[in-house]
Length: 67
Image (tube, rainbow, N blue to C red; front, side):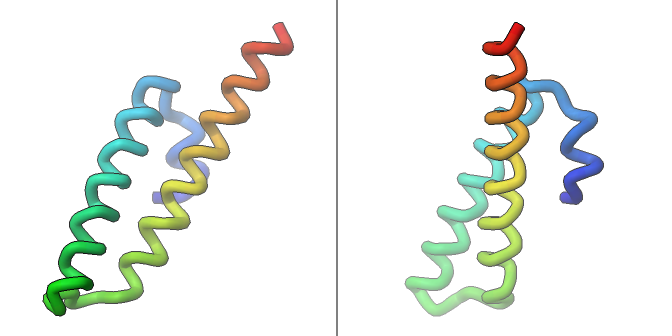
């Protein structure tokens, strides 16, 4: 998911999206450990998506604290 798409989401939607991505990351790690992972690059993409969501959530928190 691109940052432009994520910026349009509310804080609740971002938190929900982060939970979904973390669940997906856990599933990918389990697949990797069991040798069933089809696309290893997906781990990197999901990790970066989690970082993007966390960055936006942090920005929302800082903006709310400033007001």
